[in-house]
Length: 329
Image (cartoon, rainbow, N blue to C red; front, side, top):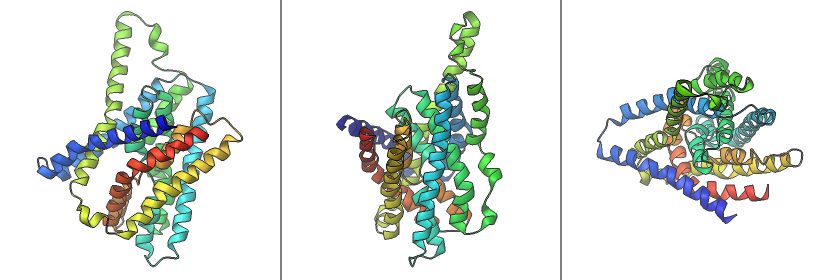
């Protein structure tokens, strides 16, 4: 139990340590922060996340159990996000925050950083375990589906902002759609191990390139976070009480709900191979896209930025604590 907590704490600490160079560059004004943030965001979304998907699928042999787990992880992610979002949105009706602020709080509490933090976190927790990363990419697909549909509705209160097209036509989802048939047909690098000569060198080279790009997600995502942290005024950051509501929902209520649902599932099925994914996904801090959507729809983007920053900093403690529940599942 202690080893699990320590491993989780070290993994989160390593991720945040990767943010230090970005923070220093931002504070020193060594780069144009706005341009750097835009470049890194494009790199992560359009290049690195698809490479993570292909890397995990092309290094995993077809297994019916893995296919079943893909469905379970997808449904679990949708159900937990949807349930927490519904509870948060309902609870906000009884506050004095108003629809705009209430929407930002409910959204921040329901959507975690499953792409830019959960994937690199799992890469550190289970190095070389491609199946675990494969399941993480499934959560990203489910996340995008929920974000562009019920998430946008909860944030804006307007059905016109629900977009199934954008939920499906985004780089992580498209790469998943392309990679899944390769998995079903059992076309992967594992089968290429029988090759010899030039063919083996070519395939090995392709495998290495894909792997290198996949491994860049963590460092670049954290440098991006560091650049954003450099623009935050920490005195104002912790003075806004509204931030702690969203943070409490995301770092305490959501993961405990995820643990309870995982425990319930364990009564009817074997969840051992996916439990780390389910708990880690549930325990992630507020997703950075709450800032993007709040800005896009003219909501309180300053509050959204505070939610992301505070929850990310506090997750250093909460993520390892939530991982302790793995020992009893």
